[in-house]
Amino acid sequence: MTQDRTRGVAVVTGASSGIGTEYAQRLAADGWDLVLVARRAERLTGLAGRLRETAGMTVETVVADLARPADLARVAERVAAGDVGLLVNNAGINGYGPFTEVDPGLLAKVVEVNVVAPTVLARAALPAMTAQGRGAVINVASLLAFAGSQPPGSLPHRAVYAGTKGYMVTFTRTLAAELAGTPVRVQVVCPGLTATEFHLGAGDTPVEGERRVHDEGGMPAADVVTASLAALAAGEVVCVPGLADAGAVERLVEAEVALRGGSGASLAPRYRDGHGPGAS
Image (cartoon, rainbow, N blue to C red; front, side, top):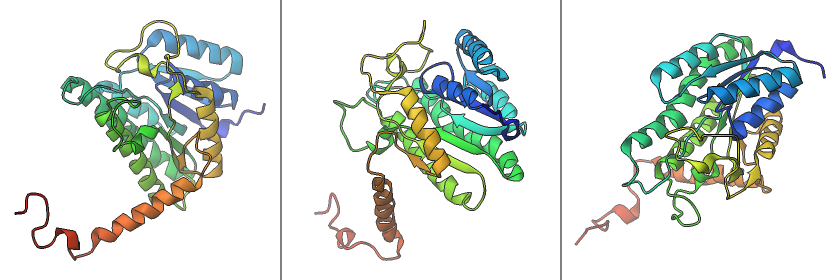
C-alpha cells in the first residue's frame, strides 16, 4: 500500500465502538493518520495501539465527552488545526424512551452530542478544507430520520433521537448545496439497524466492558463503512447502505420541491373560510 500523507489526518468521533471503530480501522488501512475521539480511554488506547501496529499510522487519542462544552472545545481546536482532511462525525447517543418519561437532562445531552457537536466540529474543519481545496466531512445519521410518522412498536420511542438525525440529514444536504462547485465534499450516511452495542444503553453513560453486539443484530458495521466510503468517492451526498433503489433519494427531492410550492402568498383553499380545526 502506498500511503498518501498529503491528504492529512482523519478525525473520527465515537471511535471506541461500532461504526466508529470500523471507520478508524478502514481509514488506517487506507493510509490515513488518525485522531480518535471517544469517552472510553481504555478502549481508545487499545484501538490506537492495534492500529499503530497493524497499519503503521500515527494515531492520536482524545478522551472527551462531546456533551461537555469544555471537551467539545478541545476537540474543535484540534479539528481546526489545519491538517484535517476528513472529519467523521460518528458519535451519537439515543436517549430512547417515551418523551414524557425520559429524563430531560438526557434529552438535552442527546441534542448536544447528536446536533451541537457535529455542527461545531464541521464548522471548525471546513474553513481550512475550503482554503486548501480538499477535504470531506461524513455525518453519521440514521434511517430513523425518515421515520417520524411511524408509531413505536417495531421501532423505538425516539422523538428526540429521530429529530436530531433529521437535523443531520437536512444540515448535510443543505451544506452540500452550499459547497457545490468546491472540491470539499460532505456526506450523510443513514444506516438502518446495525450490529453494534448501540442499543445496550441510552447513552447517558458509556457501555461497560468489552465490545459486543446487541441482540437485535442488523447490518455489520463494516458494511456501513464500506457503503459510506464508496458513496463518498462517487459523490453521493445521502448514503443509505441497504437501499437498492437509489432513485428513492431523487423522489425525496421531488417531494420537497412540491412542498416548497406552498411558499406563495396565497392561502391554501382548505384553510380558508374557517374550515380549520375547531371551526364551528
